[in-house]
Image (cartoon, rainbow over all chains, first blue to last red; front, top):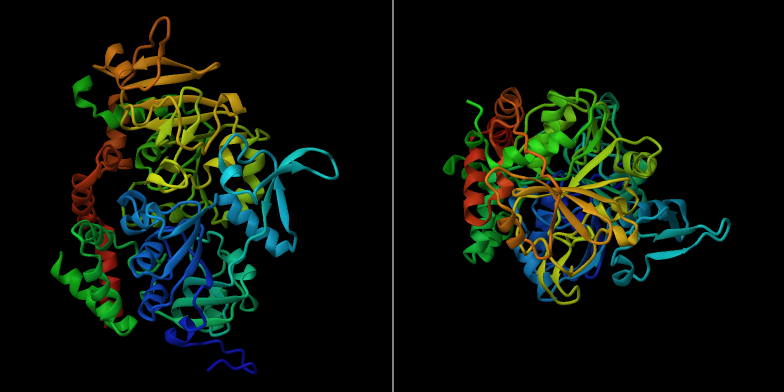
Length: 291
Length: 288
């Protein structure tokens, strides 16, 4: 479907996920339980993509699900958990048992590291970040060193970038011009730093509609390589302004996980639904049954 | 009636946090930290109308109080935001000058999993880093900001020896010996000040708490202010604003609970929220 001539980057979810190889590194847009590309993540798990490295600004339900599906090898993050709902149970156990390796990040090692990539420099400095902490011990690539020009002692953040970025948005056109809604996180940096950027969107709209939604940061077509329509694609995380977080769904998952029911959850919500539409029908049925 | 018995533990912690806030402060929220967030909003609605909250959910500055909720706090914050920034706008461009004091009045209350008597904190692991006994969520942006902040505030909803320890398992923010500036910590038992040379001084005891009890629940020796300051309850008016406007669902109490009780409470509240109806309507529409 992708046409160089028309600049139409529309792609099926299946084809977009097949851009990801075993052992790939993926930067995930959004934050913890906000605007996570969950439909994409479920398809990754369905296709049994393995040995993934995830780079997440704040990792949440998407990292939990990929750990549960056995797809996750390494997580680069400064926080992983389910916010007020608690710890991410499967992921936490996997990290404690050494099944998933954590590369300990901070907000700055990710945001300043991405900025260094965008500026095409190996390191960017800051004043006294991380001084007096144990981060220099566990991250030898994070450096405390003298500025070669002034002699000031500074903290130096190494450049970082995933190969692929995956970002869910409320609306985008077929060229990849995308509106991020309200919660921008580090998504524009991520899109620009990655070699290949996939946008999943609640709806594909004419360019004029993206222009009308101005007043907030977004993604521009040159930052984006593939556009996938995925209505409800952030569920159970939120997608402002379309829908809030599904607190009850995540809470029910946590109960199920405590009772050893993670395989049943994966079967019900990841393996059985063969499409995002079937997944949404399953969720609609839940809402009817559990309210 | 505004008697000590009619105030909950979380409301007393909120009273202590509100007392520390000055009008005009910029107040940094954490994520899912309803207790200090409700204190910030209560301050905005009462004694600190010129204070602005920085919400990490949305990277936005919010100049007034609104209501806390579970599923759509992001929506509330964004709808009240002055501007909607990117992370880099706020944290790359503005914060370094903010926290190093070019434009002061910055306050943040962090919740440590462990804290020692010099004010070092740990939110990363219990046990060794390489083979953790308990892996915690991580310290997010705290190690970036804490070393350069002019004063660091903390809160602990469950004051015990698991939290107040002699030695940390991992240092994610520095204490006084490394140049950090830990200032005050508010717990369910007391308000305490960090002093030089590893001294933590109790300033005020919460209602009904004794010196013996707080020492018993702390893993290092405490000192007590020569004359303890009396604890000041929220006024009847503040309590009313907190309970009816800022936090009608009493999310401030969630940080005091753990395990099954906590999940039950969350689910019960989530089902009652107006945001739930919005979610259901939208999902039903999408499912066709």
